[in-house]
Image 1 (cartoon, one colour):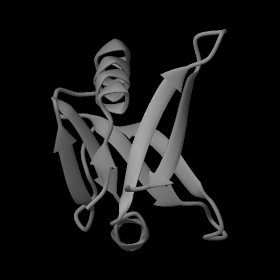
Image 2 (cartoon, one colour):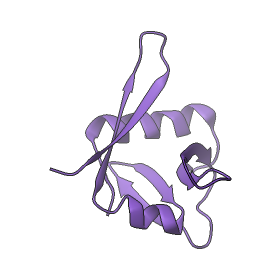
Image 3 (cartoon, one colour):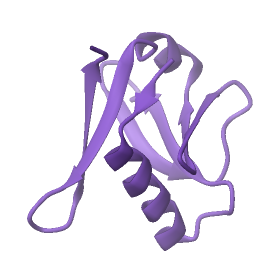
Amino acid sequence: MLTLTENASTLIKTLAEQRAVADDAGLRISPDSDGAELMLDLAPAPEATDQVVESAGARVFLEENVAVVLSDKTLDAQLDESGRVLFAIARES
């Protein structure tokens, strides 16, 4: 199952609260229209077939095929100099 770093959990939770999407909002990870890249977006709730990962109050919704691909990965996040959130996915160690 995808794991979240402390930074990722904190930033996802903060983004969801700042955007006031919904009380149970989270970050949804899904494939783009070509299936070649991943798209990340805040969502008010998971889709019916999404896998939900929760960590330290943060929620991540994984599209079912993405959940398989990311099952042995870790999601990290950091802020760049301009305050944008940058996400990175790495293999679990």
